[in-house]
Length: 134
Image (cartoon, rainbow, N blue to C red; front, side, top):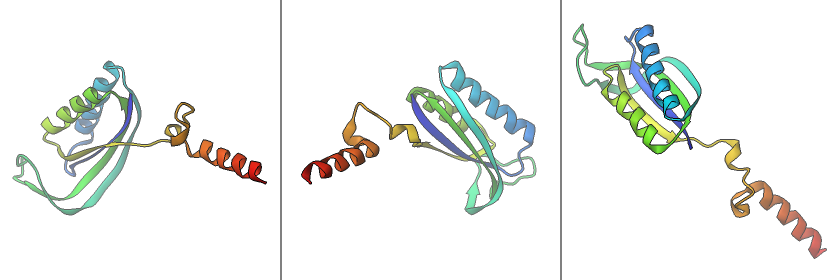
């Protein structure tokens, strides 16, 4: 399983209950396919770097947004589940943009199988090498 971070920007006019239902759908999709949801964070409403255009106009006729609600979801899942989550978010009209990142965590550095990729093992090996040379 891969550790993903999904950062999404939703419309600032979206209701709390509809966003909660969307996050429950995404979490259920991840968990039902063997993944683990580590965290869901609401970063609040912020100014967007530029005007975002929604796929469809809302009830008031707004199609362009200068503010958005930022939400992050951290989860472990297979790449096929990640594509399914992207599909759910792409079909939802409340989500303006979404981005999936392959997040790094501290456990990726602690790997005894590949010593050349582990900075901690490399540091110890360098100290042992310098001690032998003396």
